[in-house]
Length: 84
Image (cartoon, rainbow, N blue to C red):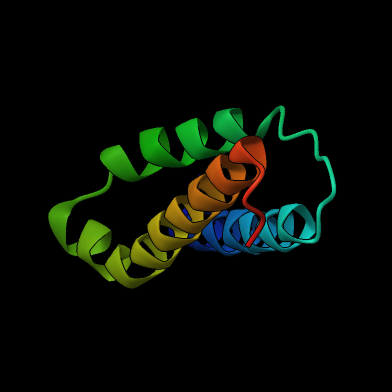
């Protein structure tokens, strides 16, 4: 993946995760299969970047990490019956 492709995929995965969290917070079930593969591919792609290149992705990766944390919390709330 080129740096532009990596950033595009980070943004797309982040948007998907945010949408999934909203869907789950609305009381809906959702199939998240394949999400782990997309995140894994991003991790592998960013791991081979040079340090200056990788540093440029830190804000977008931070946003993705926060979105994943928020999704995990929503899933935990949904499974315990708490809702949002």
